[in-house]
Length: 302
Image 1: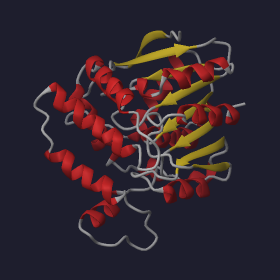
Image 2: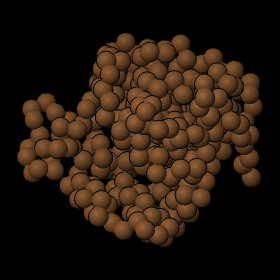
Image 3: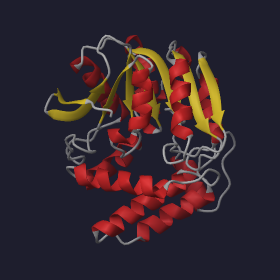
Image 4: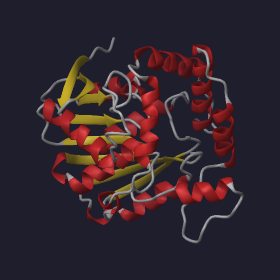
């Protein structure tokens, strides 16, 4: 049975929950989750496969998620750079000078930021289900919601089904614990895409566990606010990334259609693009995909 060492890392007044697996002398893989998602979103099966391949693995809860501290965003707004610096604080706390950074969605944008602005800390980069960190999808989303076509050169918006889900989710009742769980499970169903099976019981167990362990469940919405802040460091060119980069992207990603992964790989000279057939935006509730993703990460970080 997989067991990890839990620790609380301090960054100033902020406390971040972390969990370490494997041997400290082994190469380190830092797993960085996506928007509003707790570190346990990286499944034990993936962590175990990485540890068995000779890697130390660290996963952690972003600020405003899980057992990490929540922030008053109105008085202390933060940006992608702050979330990336949280990740550096985790590495520092474990005495890790350089790590294989594996991020998904927002976590992949954090990985890009680190590869540009803290290059010495990034041994390799795996960016999954992401878009170039300087891409602002807001205008494309607004045009799609208004029924207008994308602008020339603009990366495509989410699928119509995903945008419809956003509208439905805004109206969905969340008065009871069951309603809140049901709403989140439906979001994971949509993110799974329409090609591969969706393991609803696994998703429901995950959502229930996340709700139980969250210190402030509502605070996770702050990630959406942080994602809308576009400082100049986020617009830095990705062409200077020197770390070997694997761009993993699903052929059925409803949030970032494959053109986003293609654009990301095209901007990083060291990047290799791997399109995973049938994969949506979050792969870990589609049976068999966790093993495939683990294999890709292991091969890339060897």
